[in-house]
Image (cartoon, rainbow, N blue to C red; front, side):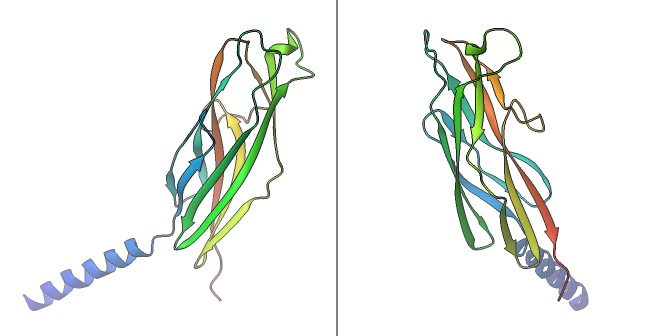
Length: 167
């Protein structure tokens, strides 16, 4: 009975140790102003994630695009805090292929290098991809939006999770 109890205690400690040392990148806050709804998440493997949703609106009779959107992302990797800001501009597209170009908005972003964060030997590389219609969809460089209408776009990021070799 003593051996079984010792084994149960040892297993419980091992599981709690794994949980306590799990390597995650935690997005704790995403703020982009009143038209942007941020989304928090925890990431422990490579993939795409949504940082939030932007409601794009153009007033009726408007010939201009929406204002710029400044999105600030904050989070933790282990106990290490991080924060960065990405600015997106929306302007009337100058080329659109066919149709009424005034209904197309171009989306451009301020340059932002990949964010590289480490926790022990785990390396997280976070890249803000841009606005998409759904997770995993292509990043949009233009969006069709008539004056007097609105449209939701999602801000997508990609995370690459790697383990560095032991010293």
